[in-house]
Picture (spheres, rainbow, N blue to C red):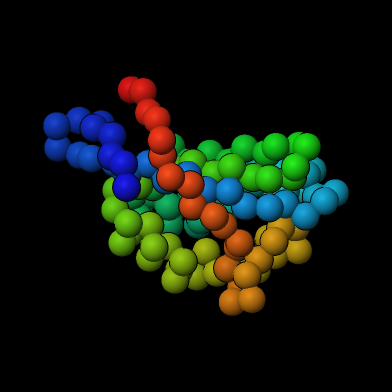
Length: 115
């Protein structure tokens, strides 16, 4: 778990992960995020998530996610919110999911960072 100093009072944790888009769903995935639901944005903000981006590798259909979070506990608590559960169901037909209904995501370990 790597941290980046944002200011003297607040440390943020940088999170990175990959997910897999199902073939042929590039346009639909992007459409569903533009705009993303207001209540989901509110959940992210309430749980200390900032600077959240998702990128697509068009050759492999792999999604790369990056977010800065205030704590692992608050990041983990997002999964239990109504907005997140509804979003996961909404997205389940365009990307790979685990048997338990969560997106198949592989965390990445940071090996370099430059502020």
